[in-house]
Structure formats: structure tokens, C-alpha cells
Amino acid sequence: MNFDFTALDSATYVFIGTLLIAALLVAFVAAAAFAAIILIGAMSTAWYVVKGVLVTLVQGINFGWDRLVHHAGQVEIPGDFQTQIAPSTGSYSRVALKDS
Image (cartoon, rainbow, N blue to C red; front, side, top):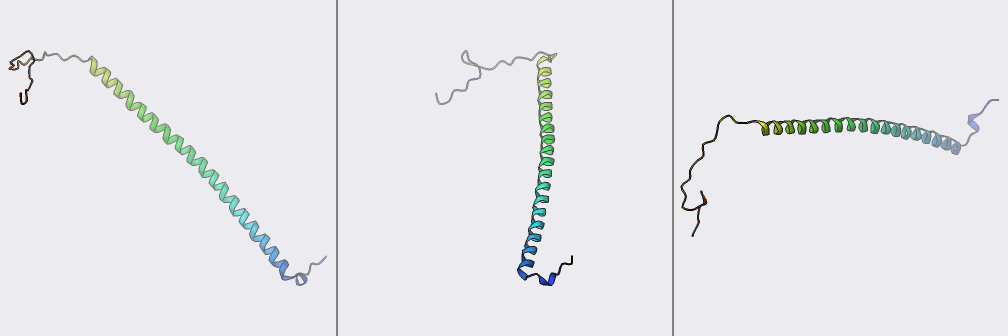
């Protein structure tokens, strides 16, 4: 069975061309959607990795600070501080009276 393309009307060519362009557009949109899904998944994974690193870093800083404060609270200074005697006229030392 031989098909004669000369017997087709120009409207048929337009219809077939429209179907081909629609098929190309559908393929392009499907490929773009698939690429977007892959990128969203990759960026989501990357975000969880970055978030985990930042949370671990902050927890490490907090742990180090707690150890430093705990250690500083237990350190005893070997010398005694010399008390300073301040000149005073009353029972409260080092009180500056303004405009009295």
C-alpha cells in the first residue's frame, strides 16, 4: 500500500506539524521537570549536610565554652590579693558625693 503525500491537504500538514511541535514541547517540559526534581533533591541533601555541619560546629563551640568556664571556676590563684584601704568619711568606702 503506497501512501501518496500529494493527496494531503495543507490543513493536514498544519495539524501534523502542530502535533509534532506539541510532542517536542511535552518532551522539553518533562525533561525540565525531571531536572528540577533532581536539583531540588540534590539541594535538599546539600542543605541537610550544611545544616548538620553548622549545628555540629555550634555544639562544639558550646561544649568548648562550657569546659573552659568549668575549668576557670576551679582554678585557684596561688597569691592573695592585697586589700586596698580607701580613704573614707563614713561606713561606705569609695562613695562619691555629688552636689550634696
